[in-house]
Image (tube, rainbow, N blue to C red; front, top):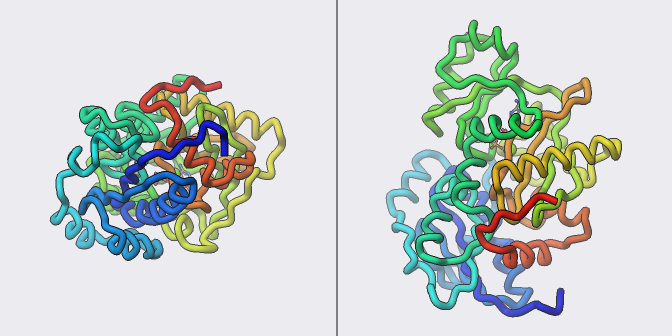
Length: 344
Ligand SMILES: Nc1ncnc2c1ncn2[C@@H]1O[C@H](COP(=O)(O)OP(=O)(O)O)[C@@H](O)[C@H]1O
Ligand SMILES: [Mg+2]
């Protein structure tokens, strides 16, 4: 570690009440011991239940991610018991930084960031405006196009099968506009299946996106401190990178750096820097792409709080650049908070 290493007091914020609660618990379970091993003083705060004692911490953080996201009844139970996250959850004067290990929901859409800003508490990642913009897939896509980053055509529901099919062709992807981890997403093959897919997506968001399906390969590019990390390829067992391929061991094969020509990899990195920059994202992010059979790349979305277990995609990308997991976390903790880091 670098010479300027000093011991920080870090609150790791995790859990929450989004569909990605389990994913967040998995991230925190690896972030917390890694930060402690670096010598930092770390305490764990579940935004649904408050600051954890050691025994609670050990119990909650030892669970693996289940094959499917928590059910609506599970989530309702956690939400029902939810405390209101407040600055009292932290020891205001003694916390150097809050490490946001939340995924989805209020932790990823900017609300938690805004709360921390109001309380004057520094935190990792992106500020509230960039977080909100990245969470909104449609807004993100408009911004991607404004800086020349290709993104597949789309429509917003309501739409009839005939009208949508004429614009987007079949199959098409139907997804909640603000959701992650492939929750509520369907690949729809005909007009007859469209409404059912829209109704499913509506369970997770009041806005639903219909998007042209991009067959082919899938890639992702991590950004750290404004610089693009090596691109990686994700090879899923099925047609899309779904919840179980994302979080089950051997669910998908991930190749870092991706086996593509150097010029294509440089272009992907350029697209990722532009996408990160136009959304005004902070210290780090991860941008997802598909590559069609003609070799064109299409940006799907930007993740302001990508998965953060040691084997998640962003940490793998960092490793391909020679940055091991603890160093990655340390650098994320040291990024200027809420500051726009210019793409370079
Ligand atoms: N337009 C599309 N064409 C092909 N596959 C898609 C498309 N949109 C999403 N997918 C698949 O679904 C996965 C999740 O979609 P994404 O837009 O990244 O949302 P999120 O990860 O936030 O749930 C992608 O990783 C990809 O495998
Ligand atoms: Mg994605």
